[in-house]
Length: 276
Length: 210
Image 1: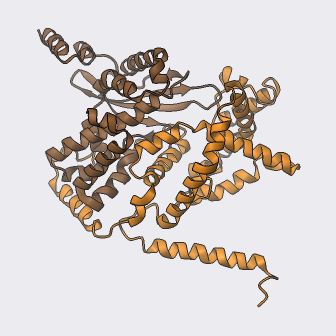
Image 2 (image 1 turned 30 degrees about the horizontal axis):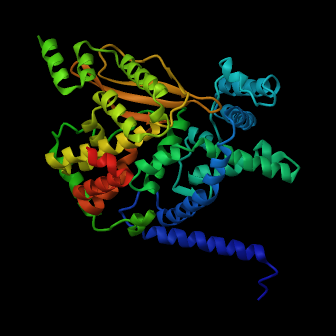
Image 3 (image 1 turned 90 degrees about the vertical axis):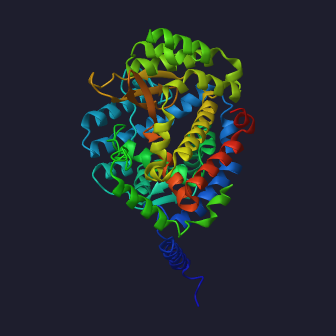
């Protein structure tokens, strides 16, 4: 046994095994689960881990950061927003949105100079609106399906398409181009804290609103990404109940009731109640 | 005459606002704007709400905002296809509990309001439309504007909100998966029980008041 000589391949084999196992477990999830979430047991485990990490590490750090004066926090958010505009612009170009892409380039030039390295968002003040794009959205724009829902460690809700796209986003992230490891890590950390601090408040709302926070966040992410891909104007999704809300077609109602009854005998993920 | 009767009813119920709008139809975007302006100007001056007095925020929402919302419609959308299984009684209870949940959650959010500014986008609707979307953007320093869209439906002479989307996420249909899960596990009554438990858990004092 030469375990020590090939650590990578062992690691690879182990992770392949883990993923394979996750898929196998997912296969047993039964018909009660969400159709877009075949990996629910694994995702719930990651979700629990993230909740703990957030509760004990990320949120407390963000709360301390939040005590900083608003102009400072705004400057920090603007600085990171500015360097992000480059990749946002590239993705707009990749989606064929040339006007938006040029506008993003204009924003970057203006804010980097007149806006003092992006600390002041002067471009927004003169009407060059900030956009929000990434590689996952670009792929979605061109019709790449999102694939199964995926909760990423520390990064949270995602899906297979967006998760894989993050590798690209990461690779072209301006901060990752920094040679100085110390500077790169501190800036990446600061950016993370700044983003987390911006969500203080919204996170408690989600906590209060949800019966099952996992399911709430899953639904939220799916709608949120769809909205981003359609740049804020998604076609209204057909409501299954809306077409027949007049209660005229009783046949359909009966079928629905049967379908619901049939799914009831496989109770999905019994552990969901213990999420607190 | 009709107007006089409404006025009388308003006095009796102490809900003047609900009926003053009924007298003459207000355009949906104007309605959303006047209600938000109203609420924001109150929150700006109310130190108690700003410092997190949820009960005060709830009562503000109940008097100023609720009359313009159609909670029966919202609950039907949130429950989705299982709505048909529910009896009239269950529908009533579901609506009441869902309303309590939403009001509580978003009244709490109101206590976090600081200096955001709301921009209204021009309404894209024809005069004969009975279902419109009022699009707004909430701007705040140092962050990307948050898109908030209101879906309104015309009922008689009045417009009622039946869905609110924050950053494209419907605060109503976002519940559909969770509710479906509850119904599959414990039927409509199971869902009602979960909602009641949840409402008690968030704030017992306010839940008891209802």
